Image (tube, rainbow, N blue to C red; front, side, top):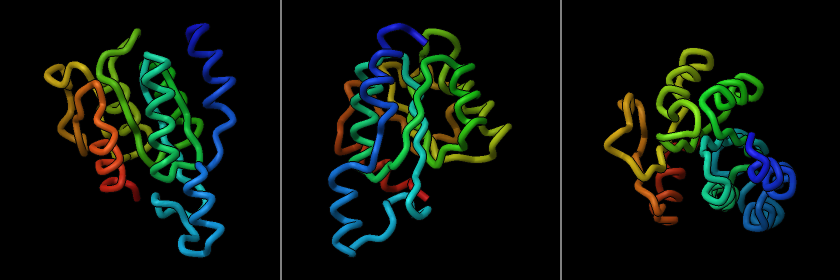
Length: 155
């Protein structure tokens, strides 16, 4: 993990808690589970090598109901992270500093079974294999499109 990403992870991503929106919905009694529909936990794996994009995706995932978030910036780290804690949803870039997001997701599918995946990439034409993707969104990411895609795949 790069030094910049590790610093951001320790300060911003690691202490992830339910967003204010999710906590307010749960406290009001209107919603007793988050949008992922798996009780109090919805784990999202973000596979992204740009720490600022990863942080932005993390905030969007929290707003959509994610209660825990794992991050990886290489193909190998993504596979290990998924083996350590099976994600409910994957948000992935295509090109990584080492390996590719689609290859990481294919390996995760082999190890963990099917998991909804949304690719967020500046190179959608290089998304191979991507036949299992619920959505392929371009960068810069449209927040509303990502939230809508997330809501459509959350279990």
